[in-house]
Image (cartoon, rainbow, N blue to C red; front, side):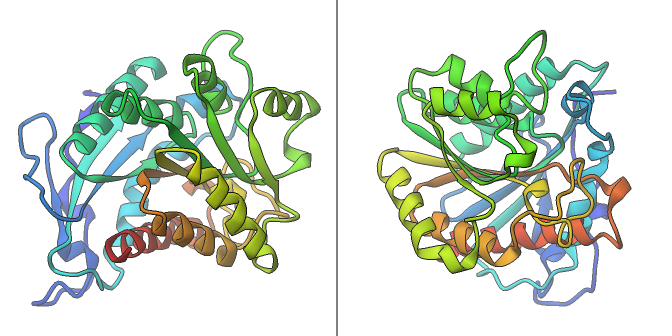
Length: 317
């Protein structure tokens, strides 16, 4: 089995029309390894799958994220299409973890991220475990080696665990911090119950900014917007990563680490739109969907709606 495969176009399905009324009718599946990437001059999106759960296994999490990218695609396909006809959207395929080799999978992912950004596509990567972040960041870094890249993470967890042997889904931002002189990281939705004292100490030592879940709500949106603006003003580009386990389990039951005290969709959408409107967002991902524990595809549908709104906000900002 290969680490990379073109997506089977039959995954994209739904109602049909003669005028691209549904998103599945707007998607073109391409093979990044056979020169099928269309030239791009205007707003264009690339959906790439990270079908990997090795990092979650290493982090002793509940496995099941490997099948998430294709399920999210199915949920996206049936959504109504309100994007302008000039907006191009491609499916850039899936990356798989073979023989538990997470490091090779991350390296391949970084190369694909670089390829897409170099060709002026806005990436929306579907995970998979949050170990995707290490690969995703390095792909951006490869394209912009001298640029200050700020990371904004919507998440219940810092994912700043130290690397004892090999990286996992709990270590990506620690790994990034150790390999980059300028580490800019803002985490929104942090839960005390889900991060031990050492992780808070690590965050303080590394200069990580964060807002706890108790303050990450729509009533506090003005303060949140100010924190985001101050963070963005100090960087060149933004990499946005959204961990579905940051949402309340009433919205996202199908994750590896569900939480009844997570944040709501209203503050998440407000935050995402605010970041998109900054003009500095370069790439994004959505991680940690676990279909095995989902209820009526509730979490997969949430992920699909997030993809839709990101495309909407980016194409109109």
